[in-house]
Amino acid sequence: MAGLFAILALGAVITVVSARPAPAVSCYGDYCSGADPQNSGCSADAYTVASAGVYGSGGTSIVELRWSPTCKTNWTRVNW
Image 1 (cartoon, rainbow, N blue to C red):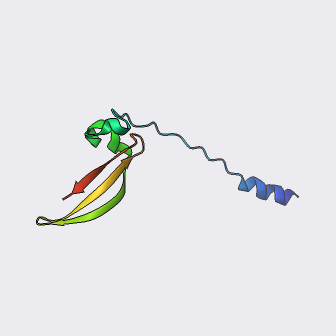
Image 2: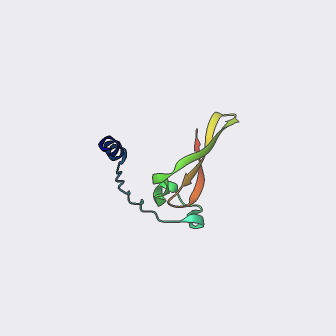
Image 3: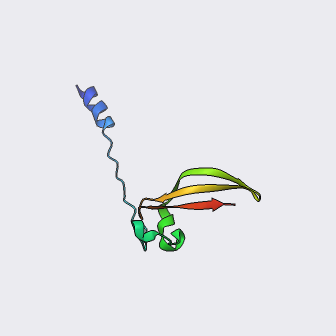
């Protein structure tokens, strides 16, 4: 019985997660339309949702669809 208690005690792990404060942003949702993602603070937690290559006379560019969970908005970014 003591062995079973020791196994159960080892299996119980407490994880403490500290919440990061949300970045300060100057817009939210539709109010971000036309705003610069970096100047508005929306790019701080943004990530790329999808990307595609675009071929033109100047070569290949990558267009990325970006999403910010804090601002609840998305935008495109072009890497020349």
